Image 1: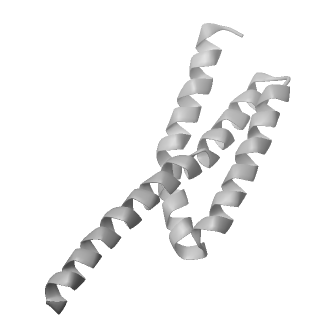
Image 2 (image 1 turned 180 degrees about the vertical axis):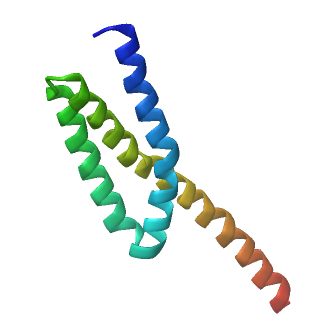
Length: 100
């Protein structure tokens, strides 16, 4: 594979990662975190296998884009976990201040 082809694969993957965070967080908020995370992780595993078995460049590029779209479950899940920790901490403090 040439350097230009490799760069196209990387650009497609990173562009998809940037866009997929919005999809994951919105989906997790609407459908629930656990089912969305399981679906995204299963799709990520399938796209990784597809990427390893790709015989042509268009197939490889498509698998990398799908991989990027589904890899955000780890990043988005971590952001949601941090949000829960910070928001619950502030809510607890506010509750203690108001009840005193």
